[in-house]
Image (cartoon, rainbow, N blue to C red):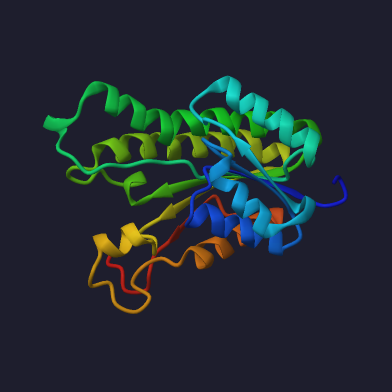
Length: 236
């Protein structure tokens, strides 16, 4: 598989993660799809077909799981040219209702997992001398909204990690980018949250995925570090 690029997406769900997989595969890449349970992405790998996609089980908050994932992907498809950390979680609740364990779990998924994945990606790419690492952020990367503290704390940290890594790894020819999803993605859950969004009032997963591919394809004389995407009608 060394003759074609390899993309690894950590945190593949039915919306953005799946759209990224289809986008990258459509661009000719071999795609590694990682989720906590491989059976959740096996069907998607089959849809993409052939040797172009492979499903993996990985808990991004477990250091050993992440290291094993990169070893397996390198063996099966080749060292990733593009790694996307897309894992995340959020729940809307009062600070007064939040248990310590729940707060910690949210931080682990939104931030610590990004560190494990980003570090493993950087190590593999530095040995080769090139690569792209993209972290998925959110509106909460920029501000902590009422009842969104669990999401904001992790996403703030993930953004800081992306900035530090970009400054360290850019001179090593490793492009580190952070994408802020400033709005609600068009999913069943998203439509329930924003019932009056109107035409194109929600972020289309396929449209977001196009931006990720564009970032990966940028010439290194004009790299983007941070990109924010939102629906045309979104106030900001």
